[in-house]
Amino acid sequence: MIRGVQTTMSSVQAATLLISTSPEQWRSEKVSTLAGVIVVPQDVTARDLDILKDRKLNYILFGESELPGPCIQLGQRVVARTLTEQVLKHGHRRIAILSGFDFCLDAAKRMGVHDALQAAGIDPTQVPEFSAKGQEGGIFQAAQEVLKLRPRPTAVVAFDDSLGSILSFQARRQEGIEVPGDLSIVSFHDWPYLNYIEPSLTTVKFEFFNAGQQAADALNQAALRGQEASDLSFEPTYRPGQTLGPVPCL
Image (cartoon, rainbow, N blue to C red; front, side, top):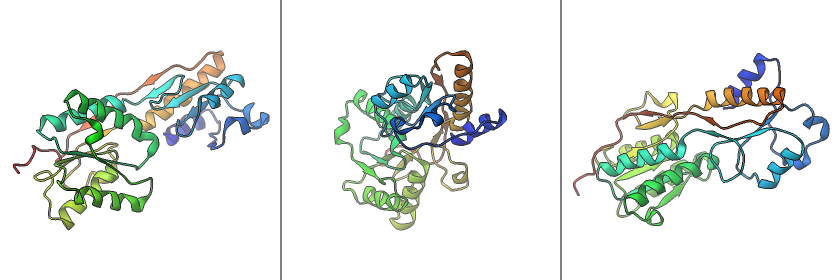
């Protein structure tokens, strides 16, 4: 997303600033140079957004959240529901969630998974979730915890391809579990460097780069015209792989 923003800003010979502090702490000389703000919702409050409004700064929220204002809609909740519905259609009922690669991107996916489970009469609170806790080493531990669960899940919804690929590797190489014969895995983000790993992940691609480009352009245009930014919507792309199959005969 940041790369997309930078591409747009460099084309108009402008800079991109990455700021991790509350807008309450921003100095006036910094504010005066900004055309707008792309807000990553994690740890951001409604008061932070009110401060942006008071300072006449247009903003757009990156991803779905409970915060008010225009947002970049990547379709994460909808496609997470659709992907989970596919898992259910294959007969899976012992399902686990593997999360924690990026907390900011987890919430919408979790809601989509829960939407599908509830529609199928499954209580989401009874579906175990294991988190990598935002740490690279945590991915291996969380994947191992999934595989040690008894009874073991027949399907796992991993919130990032890195989580799904590590789970697949540990299942096949360390536990002798066939994927998808014994364990189905679906994931998100379609990282290009994982396209060469077999079995290829059943995954979904989100338009992060295009979202960054269009968000930067929208904020620039809004600043020039004295208007507020509006929602931006992007359609995710489903990538059928080799890791989703019917529930095994137990």
